[in-house]
Length: 219
Image (spheres, rainbow, N blue to C red):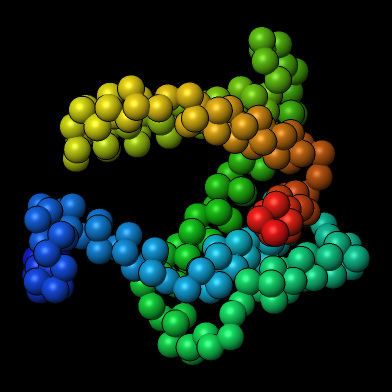
């Protein structure tokens, strides 16, 4: 009944958006939710999604036994506060925190905290024993994550859209996404390696400082 209610709401909204009305009900729901995120205030969505350093220590300290120093805590707080100050824009409505875009940002935040803890624990287990693999531990774990995610999401796309869009996208431009994937693969492998050397709370905080580099490059 809940699903039928959501679909009914999407059909009513589609009357005001004919291009969405042409989609199947499941595609319509996805399109509506994507529109929610795309039209959400980036100055609110981005800092929420990137506030992982503020919340990860709350779980990492009791669960993984991490110990943070006072300067480390001050550094994490400064980083998160600075990111919010840089991203927030005038005129932000109080009710914006209850909008769909903000809820998706909170879901992203929770997911990031979860997979960061999972990857930290996995790298700790891999680093605890001898290693004779053909590639470094971090590369192995990263390839395992990527291949698993690739299989799942490719299957989902094929299930909902068919194989044709995947083949068409690959034929249209395979080089650009391949380069982006290679850079991302190397970048996260470095993060995984850092997990073996420092607490996840510090590693994630440094990782989220990438927003400063993004702003510098965009200037």
